Image 1 (spheres, rainbow, N blue to C red):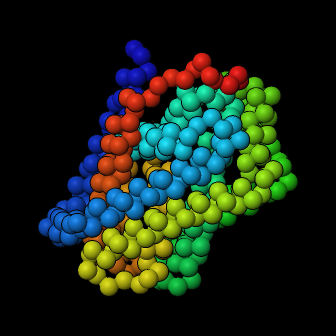
Image 2 (tube, rainbow, N blue to C red; image 1 turned 135 degrees about the horizontal axis):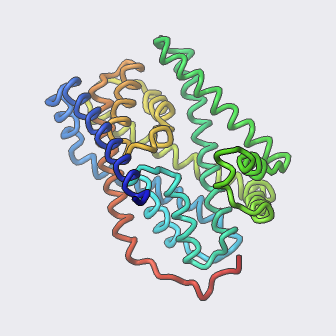
Length: 335
């Protein structure tokens, strides 16, 4: 028996669990109420889709700048790569763990060497994670100090703040001091009894790729700061999108609510990557966060559905662009 059979059953079970949770929350929070809230988005859905498209276009600028040293890909090719990666991330149960490697393969088709493609993809995703972590730490800290949270919610927020804070500190130290942290982690993993046999990367290749990472993250500070600013601008568009969505509910809310909700839900996709499309998990998390900040849980569920629909639209665009790829192997850089 091949391994694809058990994996397919595993994904099916997880999808079934997510769908079951989705239906349970839908019934529990009120089908009619949620349907009314989703339909209430109305023509604003076009604005929401446009804002999210802007988010993707801005992140494509950051990605483009990360591979600018190679000078091999045009901006619009990078946009297509981003959208294709988004489609993979949204439609599979692997999240960024398959979406990011797929971008590497698409960059290879554009002529980049494997090391350049990996370095560009990792550096953009790392900078995005850094800005996301900064958002999460700021938002969750504000929640802890200004809202009455339940014990489980307070404990979860503190754990996330500690994890994200440690990640930010480790990344800043590694970049500032030129510490080859990724290589050290891979080397350590290769010595583990169960994992080690699956780690087959050459130490020299990892070191060369990290050197290319430092070209983006350290060697040219102005370019690095520009990419960070671009990623923060992309984050700001997600906050704006939430502001528009909250306006469609007709419920009163604070100007800080969109920021706090975005910060608190920042890592849903990464935390629940194993559930295809994060079905049920995303809606449940939004409902919980909305209730925590004093908004109706049903509104959180409905807004998660609206965001799912616009992500589905982007995934459709990514799938539509997939057949357009042409292999440019003859001009590929040597590895």
